[in-house]
Length: 172
Image 1 (cartoon, rainbow, N blue to C red):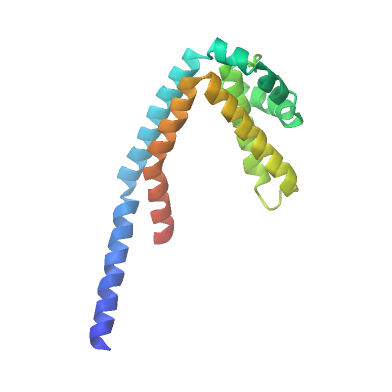
Image 2: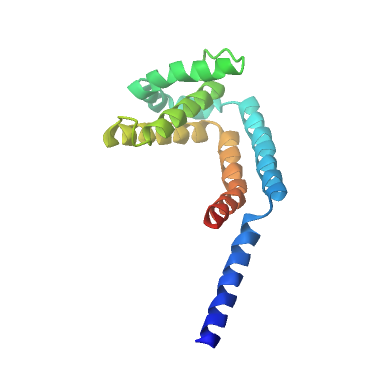
């Protein structure tokens, strides 16, 4: 028993050390998160400045028009205007990349709230919201290559933060 207990204690200590290494210290964790925010702001800012590829938007016009008529998009427009106004942005063109980006943020908020067990929203409505957001993202990424690149970069940069978050949760 003594040899096995010692071996178990060594393995436990090794696992704990590995998780602590992934979790990182608070300063390092905060620096990584700030770096992701900084680079994401730069990428999305450049994408918004570049705007939409007019030829791609013209080709996808029927899909965009259909998407913009969905009830969830209509509801998201009011939320998007409110969110943008909080940052002193007057939002009036949902056909522009900036407008679509705010619609995505409004849908994200609705989906986040709907995922709560006390939201009162049904599974079918939640699936519809997620599908609408996915469809919107597909359109945005096709008509704005810079936005797709920003999303891809953000996903890649977020992997380390996500790993650190999981490790930190394990340590709790």
